[in-house]
Length: 64
Image 1 (cartoon, rainbow, N blue to C red):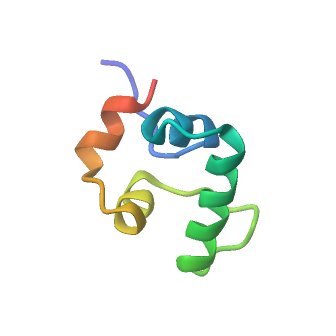
Image 2: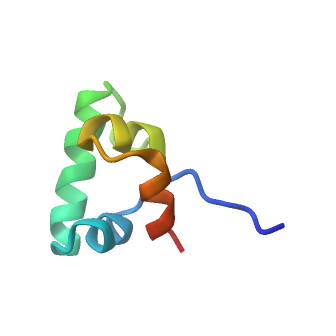
């Protein structure tokens, strides 16, 4: 069974939203601030889901 990722990258945000990769970088920065994370820490699918309101199952469909 293939392993699934639990981290969201700017390219994933680009695929989900249809916006630019730079927009994905900025959105992930906002999510880190929202969840009181340090700049080097990763954003998980659940944190992205909490911030965006998109169900986690829909997010995992876009991860490759």
